[in-house]
Length: 252
Image (cartoon, rainbow, N blue to C red; front, side, top):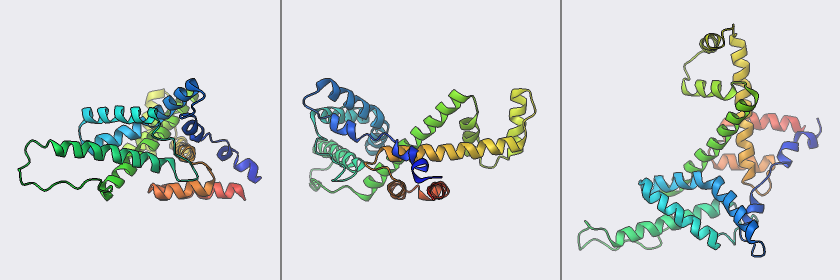
């Protein structure tokens, strides 16, 4: 297999950087709004996850998301450029500042703090906890989008790849023969445990591909090397070592 053929899916990944740039295009108001809506819709899950985890109050998290949306529409991301760093890092910095503003405002009106309480540190750098929290939320949202892609594949093909993989994920102790018996009863026909194992193998492979596709969309250059580096940063590399090896084998 040629490198061009094996890399076709990577080369055809539609990254979101054109939307990042288009979201601040002054000469096309309609195009700017559409790009902003696509970006906010795509990443509102990760943003809201982080806001909720950071402030531990869903209502306040919703308010902060609205503030973020306003700042975004007003042009806070006009300096984002793939040559300067990953979009994830720009987003993380913006959210850290927004949450820090919220915390400092709360400390100015603490209510129950004693009069001799020390003045809080202003403009403190993000803590390791904040950084880990954001990364966990980004990772969870990325995986959720990959699962949604697998769900959509099942809906289109009527093959229970997502359902069976979810069942094994939620019940790691279950055996393929047990699942085969369950589906035999559901379909009214004999299902073999070999069929279940094949479906499970295909589902895992599709989910891995979906995750790598989602990771690639966040990169300016979605090459296999860059995707692997991002998987390492996200703490997901060990789960995709086999898939990465498979992709390398296809390139050779």
